[in-house]
Amino acid sequence: MYNATIAAALVLALAVLATPAAADEGDEGGPGLDFMFGNHIDTHQLTRLRRDGELSGKFLIYFTGEIDAASGLPVARHPRGVMHDEVCGVDLECVTGWKLRGKAGEAVFLSHGGVNGNDHPVWLVDRAAIPQPGSYSHFHWITSAGTEALTDGVEIPASCDVEMAGQLEGAVAEGLLTLDDGVLIYSWDPASVHVGGGAENITCPGWFLELKAVRSFAFQHGGDTLPVTPGADNKTHLNLLTNYALVPGITGTGGMGSGH
Image (cartoon, rainbow, N blue to C red; front, side, top):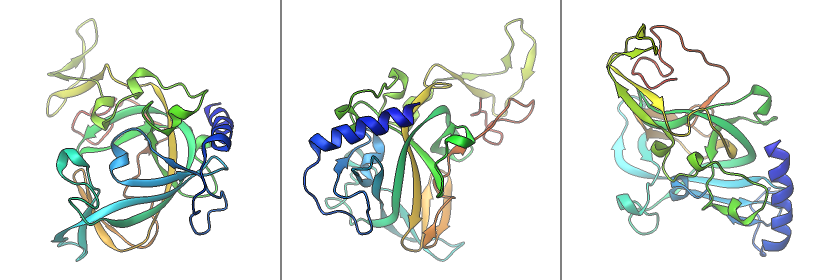
């Protein structure tokens, strides 16, 4: 299994590569190695790869100056990096939105865009693969540009080795989706459906993340603005699916043709 392979590889790599550093408070894994996923999440994450092979760290946010009318909370977003002039400490004053812990794993990519716009990619996993105990509700993939490239034994499929979430997704077909013999099986409104060609149905290595909010704010991402309060958060970054099927008239994301 990937989880066992990567854990062994990480422990070996850390023994050689880790440099002395202050451990996070309560981090029983001890000093570790600054960790990078090698994709867009690195614009808003600060984590360390601990000696026990797990991640610990935080997700960063910045406040937009707006107030969410529904909750009365200040609106916050993840900084998106240099391409958007949203670099923490340069363009923006960032703060910690969540503390996180991570465990290595793998998941099958399903889709990205949907009724909420370009939201967190959706991943198919076996329930038994979700780490326990805890509240690991988010999966994020890694690339060869990340810290995992320091280790051996982690194979990253080419279709998973991309920087942006939208690059995981393949082509979009306009019009009616039909069988090869021309028999109509679905009608989409609007008339489009993602037909693959990217990482769809490919198993990608990555990390299951458990998030605990450290403050109150309204998190804006994709097409949602969600109230956040301190404590375990299984809502704002939820992107795990444990079972799915193609059902006539129902798409994978609620009606906009972005499911599989």
